[in-house]
Every structure is written in C-alpha cells, then in structure tokens.
Amino acid sequence: MRTKLLTLVTVVMITLMSGCATVDNNDPLEAINRGVYKFNDVSDKAVFKPIAGAYKAVIPSPVRTGVSNFFANLGTFVTAINQALQFKFNKAAESAGRFVINSTIGIAGLFDVASTQGIPRYKEDLGQTLGYWGVGNGAYLVLPFIGPSTIRDTTGLVAESMTIDPLMYVDDPAARNALIGTMFISKRAEMLPGSDLLDEAALDPYSFMRDAYLQRRANQVADGVVTTKLNDNFEISDPTTQTKN
Image 1 (cartoon, helix red, strand yellow):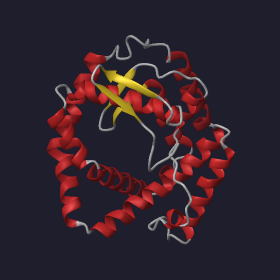
Image 2: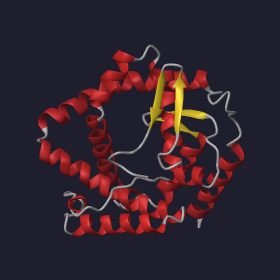
Image 3: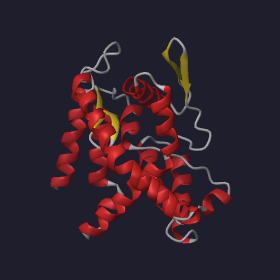
Image 4: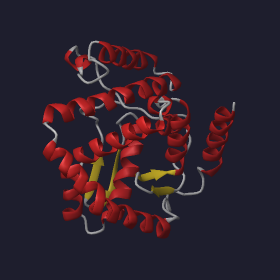
C-alpha cells in the first residue's frame, strides 16, 4: 500500500512540475546541474571508467555479451509493460514473447535467441510513457552517477524502480546491489568509445550532452519520427535502427 501511494505521489508531482521549464528555458537549474555534471565527470574518470576499462580488458567478449543480454532481457519486461500502458498491444505482445523466449530457451536471457527468430527489440520506459500521454519534460536534471534526466524522466525512473523493475524484487540486498553494480559497469564498458569521442569533439560537453539527451528523448517519445536541430550546424535524428520504440 505504501509503495502504491508513493508511486501515485511521484506521478502527481511530475504532472504538476512539468511546467517548470519552458521551451526557451529547459535548463533553469543549470548552475546546479553543472556542479553535478562535474562531480559525475570526476567520479567517472577516477573510478568508473577505469573499472569499466578493466572489465572490458579482462572479461572475454562472449561473457560480456551474455551479461549485456541478461540485463537487456530484464529491460524487455519493463518495455512490455510500458507498451501496454501506451496501448501498443501488438508491440507489447512481441516484447512479452521476446522476454519469454530469451528467459527460457536463452537461459535467463544470456543468449538473445529471440533476435535469431526475427522478433524485434524495443525499448520503452515509464518516462516515455508519461511523455506519450502528454506529460512535459519539466526541467532538465543531471542526477548523481546516473547522468542526464528531466523531472518527468526522474519521476518515471523512481516509480518504475518501485513497481516493475525486476531487480528490485531480489530479496537479498547484497545480491541486488551486486546485480545493479554489474549492470552499471557493463553499460559503462559499452559506452567507452562514445565518452572518449564526446570529450574530444564537444567544446562544451555539458551543453552537448543536455541537448542531445533532450532531442533523443523527444524522438523516443514520438517513436523516432521527430528530427530537430541542436544548433545551426548539427541535427540529430533517432530512427532507432537497432532498438525500436
């Protein structure tokens, strides 16, 4: 009962606060966000990036792929629920089928058997679901350790974690924390090339990441049909060539 009440409160909060940031000022908390961004950047370079690099260097590629597949399969469960909440029932059925196949034949998702059967992979979260039903972004936020978000997406993340995230149903706190830590390092290892490119290419990595995140989320909410400009010289489109919405 308490969990359901907290979930309801967070959803109401996001609805009320979605107007905090206007189109012309989507980053009213920029001063705070830049401080958190700097903290994340220093923490990443000092701790997480070296660990991710060691993970990638030591763990064989097939094992890393299996770990990535395992967590992606858990994400498919979350996706199926969010697709149902958006009334995308055909896609929800495909995602549910993918989850069942990979969880059984694919041995808890370690092997992506569903892809070999031509079943598409989608990715939806509660932030996208709120956006699908018309809830605005709200102010842009940079979360400690997690990174770019918005008030809407942060609310969705919290509510999702309390209700439908499979990892939150692991009773043993040590096992749950170990799984979350492994997922974090696995995802960070996958992003190593991109983070290096960001540091080298962007004059202001903070602004570049903020604008790219907001435009990518707009594309995801609109199922990949939105193309918008970040600035006069750069245009971003998210046709989701590998992961569909």
